[in-house]
Length: 94
Image (cartoon, rainbow, N blue to C red; front, side):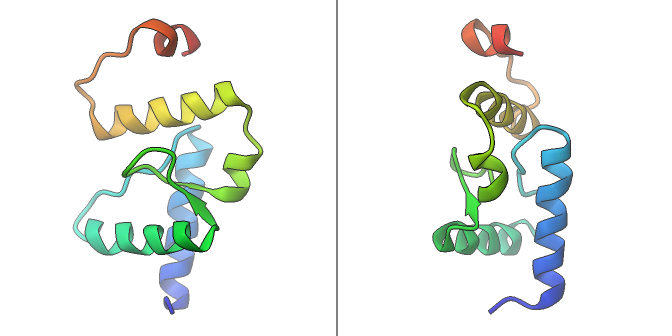
C-alpha cells in the first residue's frame, strides 16, 4: 500500500499533465519508483497507460473522445521524445 504522500503526489502529477492536455511521462530522480506506482495503479484500473511509459487517470481518459486521446498521447510522446517530428494524421490533428 502506498503512503498518502505518494498517492497525493501521483494524483498531482497526473492532474498537472492532464491540465496541459497530455499524458504524464515519469521523469526526474525518482522516475522508477513513480513508474512502478503508476503501473500498480494501472493494474488496479485507476490509471491507464495507452502507450508504454505514458499515463493518465482512468476517469479522465474515459471522458475523452478519440481525437482528444490521440492528442494526449502525442503530447506525452513529444515530452518523452522532444526531437521527434510528428507528421500525417497526428500533425493534422494537432
